[in-house]
Amino acid sequence: MNLTSTLIFLPFVAGLIAFLFQNKAVKYLALAAAVAELGIGLTVYHLYVVGSDTQFVVNLPWIESLEINFYVGIDGISLLLVLLTTLLTPLIILSSFSTDYSKPNIFYGLILIMQSALIGVFVARDAFLFYIFWELALIPIYFICLLWGGENKGKITFKFFLYTLVGSLVMLMGIIFLYLKTGSFAYEDFLKVSLTGEEQTFVFWTFFLAFAIKMPIFPLHTWQPATYTAAPATGTMLLSGIMLKMGIYGVIRWILPIVPAAVIDWGPIVIVLSVIGIVYASVIAIMQKNFKTLIAYSSIAHVGLIAAGIFSHTVEGIQGGMIQMVSHGFCVVGLFFIIDIINTRTKTVELEKLGGIRNQAPFLTVMFVIIMLGSVALPLTSGFVGEYMLFVGLFIYNPWLAAVAAVSIILGAIYMLNTFQKVMLGEPKVEFNDFKKLVFSEKAVLVIISFFILYIGIYPKTFLELSEPSVKALLQIYTAK
Image 1 (cartoon, helix red, strand yellow):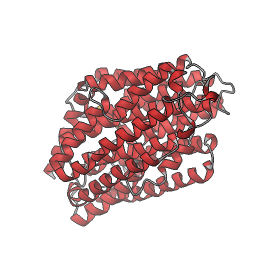
Image 2 (cartoon, rainbow, N blue to C red):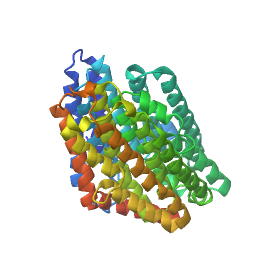
Image 3 (spheres, rainbow, N blue to C red):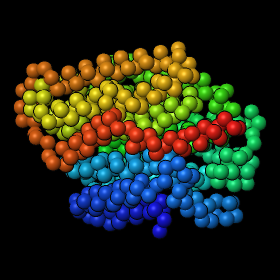
Image 4 (cartoon, one colour):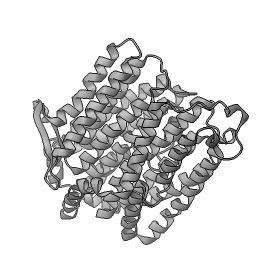
């Protein structure tokens, strides 16, 4: 079987097998499947020829009467996100080992099926297949949030589901429109299609609405903070670490090269909304009293910067967006995991009720510092590489917008350092005197995440060189049209 097909079907089959398990050992099956998936991802990375066209291609007829094919392949842009997904999923599964979830077979089966769908989104070269995977990714996370979520999970999860479903259905309209224009769902045929300005505008907004909701971009973000707060820790990590990258990837893959005239016309509005979202979310984050909600708003600010950089349609901006997706994935998963560790021991995520944890958990404190510094983009961390390139791209596009967006650097440092001070420093709380030591699985996850945050910050070439040729090729298509 082709490596790309294996990446898609291995976790899907493992997820179905997991459903059949009736004991807690299913978590070891899930971890083994995720590690095997990581091995395949690393094999693809090893065999991938940088600078070449799409590789590991499978193109088989599926629904021949409608010209729908099972058409998948990997280029540098896809590979970066495949690696992110295969690296984070075993860490997310391992992070759940210290928590006893009810119906663990369903829980871990849904995680694996979601991983399969996420990989499918990143490798699909047929628009209809892309849509199928896009929708499939929504179903597992919906049930994870609904069945294992917190307070008001039903109402909150329904809002999340409704937002994303509406966006998906609008995107389907754009896909069908392009199919009627080309007679094909193939990505390459979409690139060749000739559209009028009005037609490009229609396609732009049908696709962008779905992607903007998924990221999310202001003002389509209202589902996100409550969903991140109510979702179980594992669900929040999947949503923030991997799933929101679907929207960013969608913009790069399905909007920039297909409707470039519409990007020129409407991109400035998107950038302005993104910059507003950066400042707005940062200010709201400063005001938060709930640790989990604070990081949710922080995520909106980071994604807003990524979106602004990508729509600058510069190599620096898009490359910065690519590396920042990876950095954000590790940082936000690390932060939400730290929140979960603290919550399981103190039974609270309210900042005013926390404090002095440093005295009880020095190892956790060190890991928190590294992950926090990556989030605020300290030099020699992964966050600095991505943010620097994003700001360069945005500055090339418009220096004034870059200056406004740069306010987020100061605001981000304020709310993250203030949060660290409230949670970890100060006088120890009497009720936290029995703060349990971290178990091996928790330490392993934090060490691996911290390693990648530092490694990417010190030697970003490993990841940048993968996507650079594909990004330049995409921009050539963009400018040629």
